[in-house]
Image 1 (tube, rainbow, N blue to C red):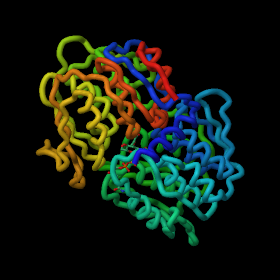
Image 2 (cartoon, protein in one colour):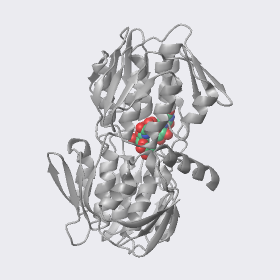
Image 3 (cartoon, helix red, strand yellow):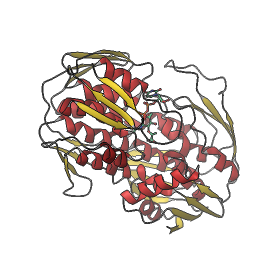
Image 4 (tube, protein in one colour):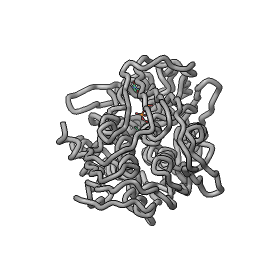
Amino acid sequence: MAAPLVTDAHRAGQRVGLTFDKLVIDGGKPLRGRVDVRGAKNLATKAMVAALLADTPSTLLDVPDISDVKVVTGMLEAYGVSVASPEPGTLILDPANVERAHFAQIDALAGSSRIPILFCGPLLHRLGEALIPDLGGCRIGDRPIDFHMDALRAFGAIVDKSYEGFRLTAPNGLKGAFIDLPYPSVGATEQVLLTAVLAEGVTELKNAAIEPEIMDLVAILQKMGAIIWMEPNRTIFIEGVEKLHGYTHRALFDRNEAASWASAALATRGDIFVAGAKQQELMTFLNVFRKAGGAFDVREDGIRFWHPGGALKPVQVETDVHPGFMTDWQQPLIIALTQAEGVSVVHETVYENRFGFTSALVDMGADIVVHKDGLESITRRVPRRPLEQAAVITGPTPLHGADVVVPDLRGGFSYLIAALAARGRSTISNVGIISRGYEHFGEKLEALGADFTVES
Ligand code: EPU
């Protein structure tokens, strides 16, 4: 169904003042230059929700100008939080006058974001009620919210499902709980953290996600007055406190954006300095990048990524929870792998449907076969459900221009890279979706010497 996607893309683009929804790219030119990467989409948006828990204002620094941040800003404002931006990249969030919002307003604002569900705990604490619309986000699998709702029930919330979403109440308040996640879900771990910090008593969370963005959220909550500690084997304890105050925090850099530009350098035989990228959160990516034949140099203020010449090498990759290879890194990397000499295999184990974007790449000349039931795989660290898929990429295959439609955020960025690496002209539609997670990508492409024009 093309129509809803077009609407989502336009809305997302409009939120950050994007004046175009189509890029016409003349590929075959290496990307060279510098891009600046700011705070992570997957941290900044959650840090904004955390501000709701405080009784004084919070200041978040390095906030990216992306549409998901605009969505959360709108939602916070609907709940009476004042959100000021004294300068680009800085948000001051004042929760002094938190109040109820109309469901229709929240529903309209939530758009295509997954963040609204994280408002549950903070709203239950502040207002005793949370109304959560049906969620959007990238169409990369079923994306259920059962872990979230089970966790909230364990805290004592009552969850009523209506045709328009969920209504949660907590007539007896929220109490610390024992929660053992069936899978180390990022969102469910954040849900537990944001709920447990003000719940009465101690919460023990087993099988928690430990992504760097989660650790940064824990750091923020600790700054706010929370008591949180970790034990081995993915266990987090949270001792509820009576109140929290505002924080000042510089958001962790966006490692997904950094890995995307790195892959763009490799696929286009270019050379990109990603200012703001740090080694520690990218170690797993850097190993794969090096094995595939990419070169990098870690500096004080960022990381330089480049194609050192010669042939790229095929790799075997399995996406995983942290510290594994992130599911959000596979899409841009796959473009570079189409240029490697030999057969690469990428197993997707986090989402059940995250290779849909590859069919357009085949139209552009790539040799990619998706095995819906996966292939025999290497030893695993974390037990998980049997929903993996495998993409087998045989290279090198020259890519040629094509007309493609952005299907989701990461797949969409990989189309940009493919078009930039391809010979000839490509038209990429629905690029508004890319503004959900990539700040000022048009300006950045221009700075890197990409040859493109825009159409609305
Ligand atoms: N899952 C369930 N039930 C739940 C929650 C999750 O079955 O209640 C499943 C999901 O369907 C999925 C797996 O658990 O198969 C992992 O999902 P997780 O909850 O970890 O993902 P998320 O919190 O929805 C965040 C990022 C994603 C990123 C994943 C994995 C945000 C807003 N989104 O999603 O980012 O891929 O963690 O690291 O933080 C993106 O940035 O493009 C993006 C999709």
